[in-house]
Image (tube, rainbow, N blue to C red; front, top):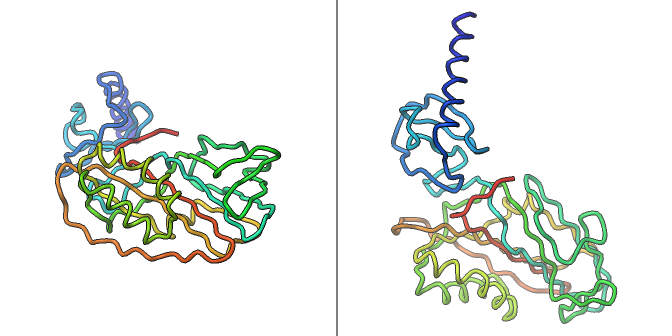
Length: 265
């Protein structure tokens, strides 16, 4: 027992010294995955790391929430500008409840007028009313700590970004206004990246980001695009996208994450 106590005391002292000896940028992703021999897992600047090799070397500390093989990203990322459009077949009062699991809501507009709920009046042309104020859509944003699958997708060069978005969003069922809103928000990210891995998240992802809408829509289209900047092309299976029909009362939501950025709860 005494030896065990001394061992843990040694580890704690080393960890304390390291936390004071250097700063690790929380947005930095260390690329050295080929090292072996984890000697300690600890926290620096509120981020958890594993140490590969020499514990005193900053270069050997890797954030444990990052997997650079691109198959899965599980990290604290902002779900950027998910917006919700409502298209009832006739003027209708609608309740939209947002149920986020493993996430922290950071912004909404307009404000909820129920418990995590918008109670609104909507017109067939998409106009949304709360009292006498008209809105084109409902907006929310959150820190999302959820798996984003990247084992399938598309490699997109900056010069192809606009046509890529036009084509894929048409397949997914967005109308011209929705495509314009989406492209004007996400195109600058793809242009800035120069080369990007893009993957549209599937139903498994949305299971933890629930939309409960009453009355229930006949068509619900949810699009969430994960974007990761690449330094060089990689081989990846091309994602097959399923087209969405718009029938009856239709609800459309789109959003995305820039996986090059990390945020903290």
